Length: 256
Ligand SMILES: [Fe+2]
Image: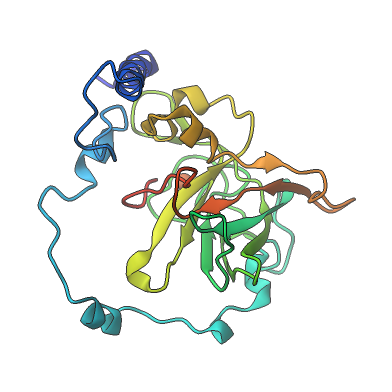
């Protein structure tokens, strides 16, 4: 029988209670603080290595990995609304922010990539076959390099929430997947950005897999009326922090 939302929510609440007790010192801290297994997020149990990492010479790894040059990333690639002949359907929005290191210094020249569902919550992906329409004018991928002050900026369409098969009536809050590279391709960092006030937050085992509520909150962009452009688009601001106490939560693997 498919698990109900009630069961999933009860599992999330129990794990959060345990994590809070650990933070407050009432319980011994979890020896695995990254929590690769988060049981309410069912497929997380299958999505991570179970054996120790294989040591590899980073230099030979880098020779095999793809490379990118500054000239390969065009300025138009950060606008997901102009990749086809017509305008995509949905709320046009700008998402901008800065990539910062743990000391708050800007990280310049970083390759930032995004991928997302369209306004109806549908991905252009063979495995996404739920009955919502594809948009012939929207692919849902973009990339840019951060400026000298660490700023990235995308123009896109606000994605819709979408159902998935974790449990009965499981829906993901609207989100944009982000990937940031460090100094080489073996340092890829992947996370998700959410929109403020989403009613699906309490029900989502991926968002709730982060036990610390302040770390969860840091994945939510802020609406910024100064980024909103008259007659054109709404605007959100979201910084990515690569280390330190206010680091952005990063996935160990790509999540749905
Ligand atoms: Fe997604």
